[in-house]
Image (cartoon, rainbow, N blue to C red):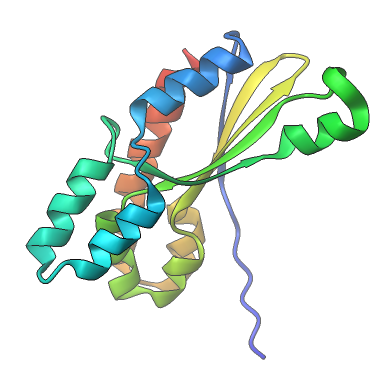
Length: 164
């Protein structure tokens, strides 16, 4: 077994908005396809142009779509009651962007789609994102790193806009 050390850079923004407002603002910017339908349509596509069309219908104004959602706060509330902080992990991305990285570095599939974590703390609602470029930097592919940096810019701008 081979071990590889990867250093990760986290971007964070804190908002004075309510948790509910932060989540709603983020949700408004990303697409929310029915994933069963989405996967079925992708499987049925005969050409890459068809895949592009399917993805373009699925993404939101940010160019990203939601793949999965984990309501971690719901579990905390079962233990601690309503006083527990709310925490939601959204797994978001764009399959067309992911393919550009995975073509160069197969391991990029371990990191994409990406996570945006939204959590309540005493000082506000935090939005956190671990950058794709930091995950891929040690792999030595300038092509994949450029795509990752572009993705980081897109997600970073989204996180900043949602926080403000």
